[in-house]
Length: 416
Image (cartoon, rainbow, N blue to C red):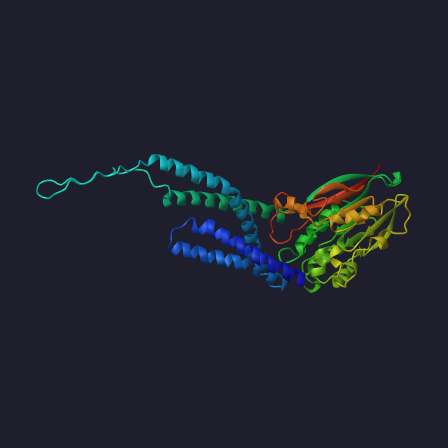
Protein backbone atom coordinates (compact mmCIF):
# COMPACT_ATOMS: atom_id res chain seq x y z
CA UNK A 1 0.00 0.00 0.00
CA UNK A 2 2.84 2.42 0.85
CA UNK A 3 4.44 1.71 -2.51
CA UNK A 4 1.15 2.48 -4.23
CA UNK A 5 0.69 5.72 -2.26
CA UNK A 6 4.23 6.78 -3.15
CA UNK A 7 3.51 6.08 -6.80
CA UNK A 8 0.26 8.06 -6.60
CA UNK A 9 2.06 11.03 -5.01
CA UNK A 10 4.72 11.08 -7.71
CA UNK A 11 2.06 10.71 -10.36
CA UNK A 12 0.10 13.64 -8.88
CA UNK A 13 3.15 15.90 -9.19
CA UNK A 14 3.82 14.82 -12.74
CA UNK A 15 0.20 15.13 -13.83
CA UNK A 16 0.03 18.59 -12.28
CA UNK A 17 2.87 19.76 -14.52
CA UNK A 18 1.37 17.98 -17.52
CA UNK A 19 -2.00 19.65 -17.00
CA UNK A 20 -0.33 23.04 -16.67
CA UNK A 21 1.21 22.48 -20.09
CA UNK A 22 -2.10 21.24 -21.53
CA UNK A 23 -3.86 24.32 -20.13
CA UNK A 24 -1.30 26.53 -21.85
CA UNK A 25 -1.67 24.85 -25.23
CA UNK A 26 -5.36 23.93 -25.21
CA UNK A 27 -6.92 26.78 -23.23
CA UNK A 28 -4.75 29.86 -22.91
CA UNK A 29 -3.35 29.79 -26.45
CA UNK A 30 -6.71 29.04 -28.09
CA UNK A 31 -9.00 31.49 -26.30
CA UNK A 32 -9.18 35.20 -25.62
CA UNK A 33 -9.58 36.49 -22.07
CA UNK A 34 -13.10 35.94 -20.85
CA UNK A 35 -15.59 33.31 -19.80
CA UNK A 36 -14.46 30.52 -22.21
CA UNK A 37 -10.91 30.75 -20.90
CA UNK A 38 -12.09 30.62 -17.29
CA UNK A 39 -14.28 27.58 -18.01
CA UNK A 40 -11.35 25.85 -19.72
CA UNK A 41 -9.08 26.58 -16.79
CA UNK A 42 -11.53 25.13 -14.27
CA UNK A 43 -12.04 22.07 -16.46
CA UNK A 44 -8.29 21.44 -16.68
CA UNK A 45 -7.96 21.80 -12.91
CA UNK A 46 -10.71 19.21 -12.35
CA UNK A 47 -9.03 16.82 -14.78
CA UNK A 48 -5.70 17.29 -13.03
CA UNK A 49 -7.27 16.25 -9.72
CA UNK A 50 -9.15 13.38 -11.37
CA UNK A 51 -6.05 11.28 -12.13
CA UNK A 52 -4.65 10.85 -8.58
CA UNK A 53 -8.18 10.77 -7.16
CA UNK A 54 -8.97 7.80 -9.41
CA UNK A 55 -5.92 5.84 -8.31
CA UNK A 56 -6.56 6.52 -4.63
CA UNK A 57 -10.28 5.70 -4.81
CA UNK A 58 -9.78 2.43 -6.71
CA UNK A 59 -7.18 1.31 -4.17
CA UNK A 60 -9.76 2.04 -1.47
CA UNK A 61 -12.36 -0.08 -3.27
CA UNK A 62 -14.44 2.83 -4.62
CA UNK A 63 -14.60 2.13 -8.33
CA UNK A 64 -17.04 4.80 -9.55
CA UNK A 65 -14.20 7.04 -10.76
CA UNK A 66 -12.37 4.26 -12.57
CA UNK A 67 -13.84 4.64 -16.06
CA UNK A 68 -13.67 8.45 -16.43
CA UNK A 69 -10.36 8.71 -14.60
CA UNK A 70 -8.51 6.00 -16.51
CA UNK A 71 -9.93 7.05 -19.87
CA UNK A 72 -8.79 10.61 -19.31
CA UNK A 73 -5.34 9.30 -18.31
CA UNK A 74 -5.00 7.70 -21.76
CA UNK A 75 -6.31 10.77 -23.61
CA UNK A 76 -3.99 12.97 -21.53
CA UNK A 77 -1.00 10.81 -22.41
CA UNK A 78 -1.60 11.02 -26.14
CA UNK A 79 -2.46 14.73 -26.00
CA UNK A 80 0.87 15.36 -24.33
CA UNK A 81 2.81 13.33 -26.89
CA UNK A 82 1.08 14.97 -29.84
CA UNK A 83 1.36 18.53 -28.58
CA UNK A 84 5.04 18.09 -27.73
CA UNK A 85 5.61 16.60 -31.21
CA UNK A 86 3.88 19.66 -32.71
CA UNK A 87 6.08 22.16 -30.86
CA UNK A 88 8.78 22.29 -33.53
CA UNK A 89 6.37 22.51 -36.52
CA UNK A 90 4.40 25.18 -34.68
CA UNK A 91 7.57 27.18 -34.01
CA UNK A 92 8.57 26.99 -37.68
CA UNK A 93 5.06 28.01 -38.76
CA UNK A 94 5.11 31.04 -36.44
CA UNK A 95 8.52 32.14 -37.71
CA UNK A 96 7.48 31.79 -41.35
CA UNK A 97 4.26 33.68 -40.72
CA UNK A 98 6.09 36.44 -38.91
CA UNK A 99 8.59 36.81 -41.74
CA UNK A 100 5.88 36.96 -44.39
CA UNK A 101 3.89 39.54 -42.47
CA UNK A 102 7.00 41.65 -41.88
CA UNK A 103 7.87 41.53 -45.58
CA UNK A 104 4.35 42.64 -46.50
CA UNK A 105 4.41 45.62 -44.14
CA UNK A 106 6.00 48.74 -45.75
CA UNK A 107 8.11 51.07 -43.66
CA UNK A 108 6.31 54.31 -42.90
CA UNK A 109 8.02 57.39 -44.43
CA UNK A 110 9.60 59.93 -42.11
CA UNK A 111 7.25 62.95 -41.98
CA UNK A 112 8.65 66.25 -43.18
CA UNK A 113 8.47 69.38 -40.95
CA UNK A 114 5.21 71.28 -41.20
CA UNK A 115 5.27 74.33 -43.48
CA UNK A 116 3.93 77.63 -42.11
CA UNK A 117 1.82 79.52 -44.60
CA UNK A 118 -0.04 82.76 -44.50
CA UNK A 119 -2.87 82.77 -42.05
CA UNK A 120 -1.00 80.61 -39.59
CA UNK A 121 -2.16 77.28 -40.98
CA UNK A 122 0.23 74.43 -41.53
CA UNK A 123 0.38 71.72 -44.13
CA UNK A 124 -0.25 68.34 -42.51
CA UNK A 125 2.76 66.05 -42.46
CA UNK A 126 2.89 63.17 -44.88
CA UNK A 127 1.53 59.94 -43.35
CA UNK A 128 1.98 56.31 -44.28
CA UNK A 129 -0.83 54.86 -46.37
CA UNK A 130 -3.07 52.23 -44.80
CA UNK A 131 -1.47 48.82 -44.74
CA UNK A 132 -3.49 45.69 -45.38
CA UNK A 133 -0.90 43.42 -43.66
CA UNK A 134 -0.99 42.69 -39.95
CA UNK A 135 1.89 43.30 -37.54
CA UNK A 136 4.15 40.31 -36.92
CA UNK A 137 2.59 39.76 -33.51
CA UNK A 138 -0.94 39.50 -34.95
CA UNK A 139 -2.98 37.68 -32.28
CA UNK A 140 -5.70 36.50 -34.67
CA UNK A 141 -3.27 34.50 -36.81
CA UNK A 142 -1.52 33.02 -33.79
CA UNK A 143 -4.93 32.10 -32.38
CA UNK A 144 -5.88 30.32 -35.61
CA UNK A 145 -2.61 28.38 -35.61
CA UNK A 146 -3.00 27.32 -31.96
CA UNK A 147 -6.60 26.24 -32.49
CA UNK A 148 -5.61 24.13 -35.50
CA UNK A 149 -2.93 22.32 -33.48
CA UNK A 150 -5.31 21.80 -30.55
CA UNK A 151 -8.05 20.38 -32.78
CA UNK A 152 -5.63 18.02 -34.50
CA UNK A 153 -4.17 16.80 -31.21
CA UNK A 154 -7.59 16.42 -29.60
CA UNK A 155 -9.12 14.42 -32.44
CA UNK A 156 -6.05 12.19 -32.82
CA UNK A 157 -5.74 11.50 -29.09
CA UNK A 158 -9.44 10.70 -28.82
CA UNK A 159 -9.30 8.43 -31.87
CA UNK A 160 -6.27 6.51 -30.57
CA UNK A 161 -7.92 6.08 -27.19
CA UNK A 162 -11.16 4.84 -28.74
CA UNK A 163 -9.26 2.31 -30.85
CA UNK A 164 -7.28 1.26 -27.77
CA UNK A 165 -10.43 0.72 -25.70
CA UNK A 166 -11.89 -1.52 -28.37
CA UNK A 167 -8.65 -3.54 -28.50
CA UNK A 168 -8.24 -3.84 -24.72
CA UNK A 169 -11.83 -4.92 -24.12
CA UNK A 170 -11.88 -7.32 -27.06
CA UNK A 171 -11.01 -11.02 -26.94
CA UNK A 172 -7.34 -11.87 -26.39
CA UNK A 173 -5.31 -12.80 -29.42
CA UNK A 174 -4.47 -16.51 -29.46
CA UNK A 175 -0.89 -17.11 -30.62
CA UNK A 176 1.29 -20.17 -31.02
CA UNK A 177 5.06 -20.20 -30.81
CA UNK A 178 7.44 -23.15 -31.23
CA UNK A 179 10.56 -23.08 -29.07
CA UNK A 180 13.32 -25.69 -29.50
CA UNK A 181 15.07 -26.88 -26.32
CA UNK A 182 18.36 -28.73 -26.64
CA UNK A 183 17.73 -31.03 -23.65
CA UNK A 184 14.10 -31.85 -24.41
CA UNK A 185 13.72 -35.62 -25.02
CA UNK A 186 12.38 -36.55 -28.45
CA UNK A 187 9.48 -38.31 -26.77
CA UNK A 188 8.36 -34.94 -25.32
CA UNK A 189 8.54 -33.10 -28.63
CA UNK A 190 5.41 -31.00 -29.04
CA UNK A 191 4.62 -30.57 -25.31
CA UNK A 192 2.30 -27.58 -25.13
CA UNK A 193 2.09 -24.94 -22.38
CA UNK A 194 -0.82 -22.47 -22.46
CA UNK A 195 0.73 -19.26 -21.12
CA UNK A 196 -1.19 -16.26 -19.82
CA UNK A 197 -0.20 -13.31 -17.67
CA UNK A 198 -1.49 -9.98 -16.37
CA UNK A 199 -5.17 -10.84 -16.27
CA UNK A 200 -5.60 -7.91 -13.85
CA UNK A 201 -9.01 -8.57 -12.39
CA UNK A 202 -10.04 -5.32 -10.75
CA UNK A 203 -12.25 -2.26 -10.96
CA UNK A 204 -12.81 -2.56 -14.72
CA UNK A 205 -12.63 -6.32 -15.34
CA UNK A 206 -14.59 -9.00 -13.51
CA UNK A 207 -15.88 -12.56 -13.77
CA UNK A 208 -16.81 -12.39 -17.46
CA UNK A 209 -13.20 -11.51 -18.26
CA UNK A 210 -11.97 -14.62 -16.43
CA UNK A 211 -14.57 -16.84 -18.05
CA UNK A 212 -13.50 -15.71 -21.52
CA UNK A 213 -9.83 -16.39 -20.76
CA UNK A 214 -10.55 -19.83 -19.29
CA UNK A 215 -12.66 -20.78 -22.32
CA UNK A 216 -9.87 -19.69 -24.70
CA UNK A 217 -7.23 -21.68 -22.79
CA UNK A 218 -9.39 -24.80 -22.67
CA UNK A 219 -9.83 -24.66 -26.45
CA UNK A 220 -6.04 -24.89 -26.79
CA UNK A 221 -6.08 -28.43 -25.33
CA UNK A 222 -2.74 -27.81 -23.60
CA UNK A 223 -0.58 -30.21 -21.62
CA UNK A 224 0.14 -27.53 -19.00
CA UNK A 225 -1.29 -24.14 -18.06
CA UNK A 226 1.03 -21.41 -16.75
CA UNK A 227 -0.40 -18.24 -15.20
CA UNK A 228 2.64 -16.03 -14.71
CA UNK A 229 1.50 -13.35 -12.29
CA UNK A 230 -0.57 -10.19 -11.90
CA UNK A 231 -3.88 -11.99 -11.68
CA UNK A 232 -5.60 -9.35 -9.52
CA UNK A 233 -5.77 -5.73 -8.41
CA UNK A 234 -7.75 -6.14 -5.22
CA UNK A 235 -8.40 -8.41 -2.27
CA UNK A 236 -9.95 -11.87 -2.20
CA UNK A 237 -13.04 -10.36 -0.57
CA UNK A 238 -13.42 -7.98 -3.52
CA UNK A 239 -12.41 -10.25 -6.40
CA UNK A 240 -12.75 -13.84 -5.22
CA UNK A 241 -15.94 -14.31 -7.20
CA UNK A 242 -14.32 -12.84 -10.31
CA UNK A 243 -11.42 -15.31 -10.05
CA UNK A 244 -13.66 -18.34 -9.41
CA UNK A 245 -13.83 -19.54 -13.07
CA UNK A 246 -10.14 -20.46 -12.85
CA UNK A 247 -11.28 -23.71 -11.22
CA UNK A 248 -12.51 -24.75 -14.69
CA UNK A 249 -9.08 -24.68 -16.33
CA UNK A 250 -8.30 -27.97 -18.07
CA UNK A 251 -4.93 -29.49 -18.97
CA UNK A 252 -3.32 -32.91 -18.98
CA UNK A 253 -0.63 -32.22 -16.39
CA UNK A 254 -2.00 -29.41 -14.26
CA UNK A 255 -2.21 -25.62 -13.97
CA UNK A 256 0.50 -23.58 -12.26
CA UNK A 257 0.79 -20.03 -10.91
CA UNK A 258 3.54 -17.67 -9.80
CA UNK A 259 3.07 -14.32 -8.11
CA UNK A 260 3.43 -10.99 -9.88
CA UNK A 261 4.15 -7.63 -8.33
CA UNK A 262 0.44 -6.75 -8.10
CA UNK A 263 -0.30 -9.73 -5.88
CA UNK A 264 1.87 -8.06 -3.23
CA UNK A 265 -0.38 -4.98 -3.36
CA UNK A 266 -3.51 -7.12 -3.01
CA UNK A 267 -2.97 -9.47 -0.07
CA UNK A 268 -0.63 -12.11 -1.46
CA UNK A 269 -1.05 -14.67 1.33
CA UNK A 270 -4.82 -14.81 0.88
CA UNK A 271 -4.47 -14.99 -2.89
CA UNK A 272 -1.97 -17.84 -2.73
CA UNK A 273 -4.47 -19.81 -0.65
CA UNK A 274 -7.35 -18.87 -2.94
CA UNK A 275 -5.53 -19.76 -6.15
CA UNK A 276 -4.51 -23.10 -4.62
CA UNK A 277 -8.12 -23.71 -3.62
CA UNK A 278 -9.16 -23.09 -7.23
CA UNK A 279 -6.87 -25.89 -8.38
CA UNK A 280 -3.75 -24.04 -9.53
CA UNK A 281 -0.51 -25.11 -7.91
CA UNK A 282 1.45 -22.09 -6.71
CA UNK A 283 5.19 -22.41 -7.29
CA UNK A 284 6.80 -20.26 -4.61
CA UNK A 285 10.53 -20.76 -5.15
CA UNK A 286 9.75 -24.38 -5.93
CA UNK A 287 9.82 -26.84 -8.81
CA UNK A 288 7.91 -29.95 -9.82
CA UNK A 289 8.63 -32.85 -12.14
CA UNK A 290 6.40 -33.05 -15.20
CA UNK A 291 6.36 -36.66 -16.39
CA UNK A 292 4.83 -36.81 -19.83
CA UNK A 293 5.20 -38.92 -22.95
CA UNK A 294 7.92 -41.05 -21.43
CA UNK A 295 10.15 -38.09 -20.48
CA UNK A 296 10.65 -35.73 -17.56
CA UNK A 297 10.77 -31.92 -17.51
CA UNK A 298 11.43 -29.70 -14.50
CA UNK A 299 8.90 -26.89 -14.12
CA UNK A 300 10.07 -24.24 -11.62
CA UNK A 301 8.64 -20.99 -10.33
CA UNK A 302 10.01 -18.07 -8.32
CA UNK A 303 8.30 -15.32 -6.36
CA UNK A 304 8.24 -11.89 -7.92
CA UNK A 305 11.03 -9.53 -6.93
CA UNK A 306 8.39 -7.30 -5.30
CA UNK A 307 8.27 -9.84 -2.46
CA UNK A 308 11.66 -8.64 -1.24
CA UNK A 309 11.23 -6.55 1.88
CA UNK A 310 7.53 -7.33 2.31
CA UNK A 311 8.08 -10.07 4.90
CA UNK A 312 5.60 -12.18 2.94
CA UNK A 313 6.56 -15.40 1.16
CA UNK A 314 10.15 -14.26 0.77
CA UNK A 315 12.06 -12.85 -2.20
CA UNK A 316 12.78 -14.90 -5.31
CA UNK A 317 15.11 -17.77 -4.41
CA UNK A 318 16.61 -19.28 -7.54
CA UNK A 319 18.78 -21.71 -5.62
CA UNK A 320 15.75 -23.19 -3.88
CA UNK A 321 13.79 -23.45 -7.13
CA UNK A 322 16.59 -24.62 -9.40
CA UNK A 323 19.38 -26.05 -7.27
CA UNK A 324 20.25 -29.73 -6.78
CA UNK A 325 18.44 -31.00 -9.86
CA UNK A 326 19.33 -33.43 -12.63
CA UNK A 327 21.36 -31.37 -15.14
CA UNK A 328 20.30 -33.63 -17.99
CA UNK A 329 16.67 -32.57 -17.71
CA UNK A 330 15.27 -29.51 -19.45
CA UNK A 331 13.93 -26.87 -17.08
CA UNK A 332 11.25 -24.27 -17.72
CA UNK A 333 11.04 -21.38 -15.26
CA UNK A 334 7.93 -19.33 -14.54
CA UNK A 335 8.94 -15.82 -13.45
CA UNK A 336 6.70 -12.77 -13.72
CA UNK A 337 9.32 -10.23 -14.80
CA UNK A 338 11.59 -10.88 -17.79
CA UNK A 339 14.73 -9.52 -16.12
CA UNK A 340 14.68 -12.59 -13.85
CA UNK A 341 16.35 -14.29 -16.81
CA UNK A 342 19.73 -12.79 -15.90
CA UNK A 343 19.73 -14.83 -12.69
CA UNK A 344 17.95 -17.79 -14.30
CA UNK A 345 20.69 -18.06 -16.91
CA UNK A 346 23.31 -18.64 -14.21
CA UNK A 347 21.29 -21.72 -13.13
CA UNK A 348 21.12 -23.22 -16.60
CA UNK A 349 17.43 -22.53 -17.30
CA UNK A 350 16.42 -23.58 -20.82
CA UNK A 351 13.30 -21.43 -21.11
CA UNK A 352 11.70 -18.71 -18.99
CA UNK A 353 8.03 -17.75 -19.39
CA UNK A 354 7.16 -14.22 -18.26
CA UNK A 355 4.69 -11.36 -18.52
CA UNK A 356 4.66 -8.02 -16.67
CA UNK A 357 5.44 -5.75 -19.63
CA UNK A 358 1.96 -5.80 -21.27
CA UNK A 359 3.96 -5.48 -24.50
CA UNK A 360 4.17 -1.79 -23.61
CA UNK A 361 0.33 -1.51 -23.58
CA UNK A 362 0.39 2.04 -24.95
CA UNK A 363 2.84 2.66 -27.76
CA UNK A 364 5.46 4.22 -27.44
CA UNK A 365 5.70 2.92 -23.82
CA UNK A 366 7.23 -0.25 -25.26
CA UNK A 367 10.47 1.69 -25.84
CA UNK A 368 10.56 2.81 -22.21
CA UNK A 369 9.84 -0.74 -20.97
CA UNK A 370 12.77 -1.92 -23.08
CA UNK A 371 15.09 0.19 -20.94
CA UNK A 372 14.18 -1.94 -17.90
CA UNK A 373 13.40 -5.38 -19.30
CA UNK A 374 15.57 -7.45 -21.67
CA UNK A 375 12.54 -8.67 -23.66
CA UNK A 376 9.35 -6.63 -24.04
CA UNK A 377 7.22 -9.01 -26.09
CA UNK A 378 7.67 -12.33 -27.84
CA UNK A 379 10.71 -14.59 -27.88
CA UNK A 380 14.20 -13.43 -26.95
CA UNK A 381 17.35 -14.74 -25.35
CA UNK A 382 19.38 -13.69 -22.30
CA UNK A 383 22.83 -15.20 -21.76
CA UNK A 384 21.82 -18.47 -23.42
CA UNK A 385 18.40 -18.73 -21.73
CA UNK A 386 15.40 -18.37 -24.01
CA UNK A 387 12.77 -15.97 -22.73
CA UNK A 388 9.19 -15.77 -23.96
CA UNK A 389 7.16 -12.75 -22.81
CA UNK A 390 3.41 -12.64 -23.35
CA UNK A 391 1.57 -9.32 -23.69
CA UNK A 392 -0.91 -10.35 -21.02
CA UNK A 393 -4.64 -10.82 -21.31
CA UNK A 394 -5.74 -7.73 -19.39
CA UNK A 395 -4.55 -4.19 -18.75
CA UNK A 396 -3.53 -1.99 -15.88
CA UNK A 397 -4.81 1.55 -15.45
CA UNK A 398 -6.39 2.82 -18.68
CA UNK A 399 -8.62 0.24 -20.38
CA UNK A 400 -6.61 0.96 -23.51
CA UNK A 401 -4.14 -1.02 -25.60
CA UNK A 402 -2.44 0.56 -28.60
CA UNK A 403 0.21 -1.46 -30.42
CA UNK A 404 0.04 -4.42 -28.02
CA UNK A 405 -3.03 -6.62 -28.30
CA UNK A 406 -4.12 -8.76 -25.33
CA UNK A 407 -2.69 -12.22 -25.74
CA UNK A 408 -2.76 -15.86 -24.69
CA UNK A 409 0.03 -17.99 -26.11
CA UNK A 410 0.36 -21.71 -26.71
CA UNK A 411 4.07 -22.41 -26.24
CA UNK A 412 5.01 -25.60 -28.06
CA UNK A 413 8.30 -27.14 -26.94
CA UNK A 414 10.31 -28.84 -29.65
CA UNK A 415 13.20 -31.24 -29.35
CA UNK A 416 16.23 -29.56 -30.96
